Image (cartoon, rainbow, N blue to C red; front, side, top):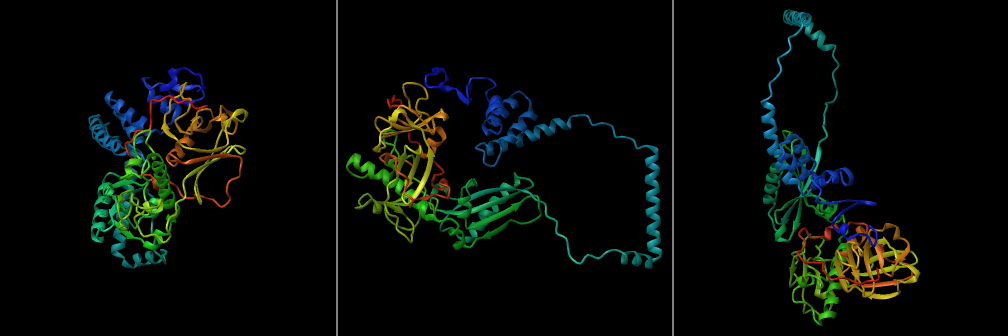
Length: 488
């Protein structure tokens, strides 16, 4: 969409180039599957409901199956709809008149009778002459080893969260019962249920589809079960030291802690004192210093305590003298986490943007900058964090923006501007990239714009940042009707 396009395109879904879809189109979801995303769980599920209302049960069943992937947000709804339709479809099929059985031709009957006669004669000979049977058996090959036949099945992974002090027998019983329950609905599929310890009461004994390999690596037990096989639930406890060392927790702990500390520092500069509750950092715009309180990586919890107990999550003490003592992990750590603020470095010469929490690079992306050297150099704090920002023209600032006064780091639909000097001074990223860094750039983070090379001592993150995202995001409003006048 160009800068001065019609405002009517604002609520249209952009497919590619000049192709848009209107949500009011009766065939909106059919076109989503045809032109945009053939595997869209939402489109398949809603089309399934539409076909079911029209009485097209077989078509509805196929759409529900396509929407019931293990990572689909419609997984349980689609599975339940499939089970209900299976009964209806099988009932309708039972009412169809069955064809008459075919009559065997005469020559087939003669062949069968001849074979039956020969088998009877052989049995009589074996009973009358036992030595003949031993001669036949001695001529057969005797195998020196056994045979083990294994058929591959689809594996479906889940994660189950346990409080840290859960007794071992309760863990075993819970894993057994949940494996049986899930296995009833997953025929001829192997259920892998990983157990992970947590201090978050909201996650206690909760079962969710497994989406992150880091969660798998932090598990301490695994249950394996296939309802089709005549075997019990197989539960295996892992070596804790090996599981704990699979991923180095320090980088993710440092990034999570300093993300919050940077927001705290900015809050204190704005208000003059720290907040009584850390949740005050996750407020509605314009007080959305953070998008969320990240998880502490080791325990997978973002619960907050006012004093250290070692129970997991974080400690927040607003009376402490330093930011490092004010917010830190609520678990024993071998190396204290120093305060290194989250910052953004922009190099105009290389058209690059780096989000860093020294000594680690959180993420890096290609950018577009201002024409005629209109992007200034210097240090600029983030003043606005806003999703779906409004400008003078629709989609002027993309899906998200980080405002810095007269200019901003914002999204764009114009991919050709990335790696070029085409803007009026702002820094542009494609929409997926600005959305990726939005949650990891707190309000108050300092943006440095220059032509200097990146610090060689920084270490790129090799592990995913997904473990820092809480399962339940706060309901803070990060959008506004304010019309921004950034340079664009």
